Amino acid sequence: MVLLQKTLLYIEGLGRQLYPQLDLWETAMPFLEEWMMNQVGPKAFINSVKDRAPFWAEKLPELPELLYDSLKQGKAMNHRMDQLYQGYRQSKRQQATGKFLFGVGATLVVCSAIMLSSGFESLSLAGGIAGVTFWLFSWRAYRR
Image (cartoon, rainbow, N blue to C red; front, side):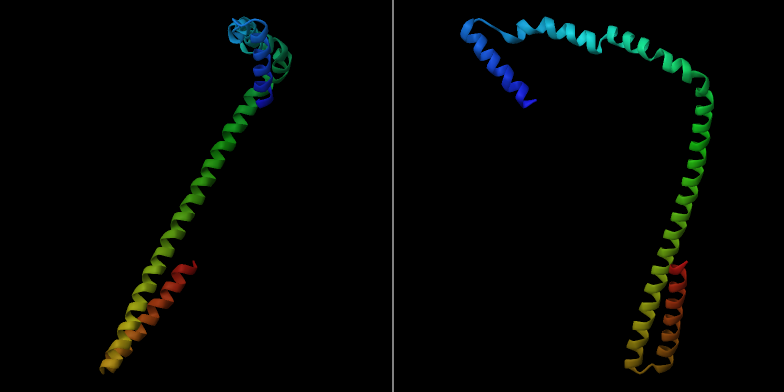
């Protein structure tokens, strides 16, 4: 693209040296419009359809079956994605439950250590056992 612009700049410069009133865009516009109509205009579209008509005529009988198969695969894919999403949500819920139980267990263990240092041995033992139990439950919930 840069080389094309550079070439056009040189051509315009040379053209203006020979004919100072030259406007390259105004001069080239009719040629560019005709070229565009031939390349992407209605005439080009009609020619493209004519060129590809034998191919599409050959493939036309297969289209209903291909469409049905595609829709069936899409439905199966949607069902599979729903299952994966539900499994993902359940896994995330179990992980959240495990983290919550771990937090409760850690809090109980820390509280039991504080109570042990304060002289409440019986309460600290119960809190420690409860904390370890919550940790085990959290590990089990997180592992599923």
